[in-house]
Picture 1 (tube, one colour):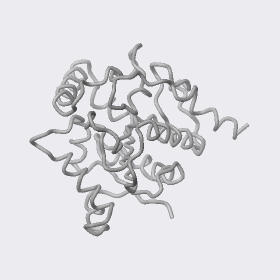
Picture 2: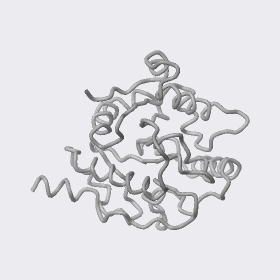
Picture 3: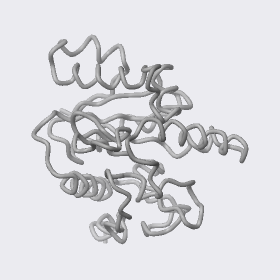
Picture 4: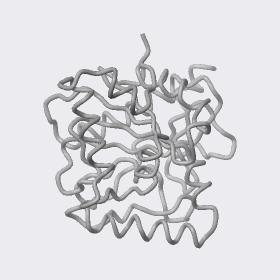
Length: 244
């Protein structure tokens, strides 16, 4: 049975206090609500406080579990509010090296692209190593973030289990509609990052569409500033081969 997307109150009422789902959500809530150590992503914090985020708990964490959640979430996303995101929690397990999480993350996105039955948006290039690329599913461009328990220095990307966040691109477009709004928002996020993490903000962080910016490099940030290599030429190719 496919996992159902949940809002905050449903999570609290559905899972026993000592379940892994309740423990992970309690940790996430504390992070979003902390006033002494504000979480850097102001969009996520605002979305949490306004109950605009939606949650799914999966075991195991794979494309087969995530695809139905996205299919349920995306048609409703705009009705949830301007700061919505879909948060995917997975059951905690033994901590593995960072590179294994990275590879698993990209394998999941690749498998999602294969399962997607909607055409890739015409305005989004297929090649990852381009300024305009963004992961898409169900015809929607999505900014994706991966958090793992292997993250130590980059605390903004740490979680007690591997966690994925899917944020519709239109969330940013609505909030960052003017250059002034974008400048203020990015400056605030960077200030918070500088105080939150034990390392400086990653050089890969940038604005979507800028010539030197690559979205795929921002999806999975490790604890170092080592530039991420392009994991795949295209995530739509397997889908095209299947349809051919």
